[in-house]
Image (cartoon, rainbow, N blue to C red):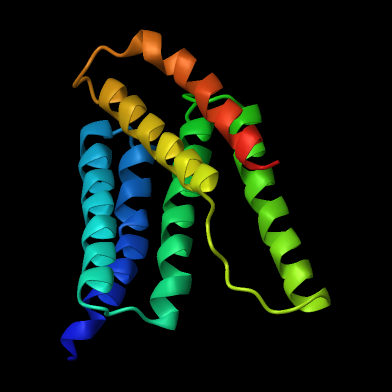
Length: 167
């Protein structure tokens, strides 16, 4: 095995972790779900650090890494909505924004010219807030912290930044 593939393996691990994470969410084992979510988050940070620090970047990683992040995030929001912990309109807003961005990017790519997908600062902030909100909600559901007042506020913060970053 080539050591420069470690970031890609960590990305694949993050995709695989969606399965136990989903199971724990659906069985309302929120402490375990939180733990798996944290492990996935750490693996994301480590693979990014290794890819940048040692120049172990790859085309696969450039595509799979953000895809793994989106898969985990969308899965999380869909399942939390299914469990009644989030409003349906929020997951539709997030999914709709991402779908519009992907379709717009593909149309631009095929109709105009090739371009490399580079997330904007606002897009990165949106993802950060969406992930942070999941962490806060999972902490609350797992009973680690009484964060009730922040849960409702967080829904509107996520919605606002999602709308703003989609413009």
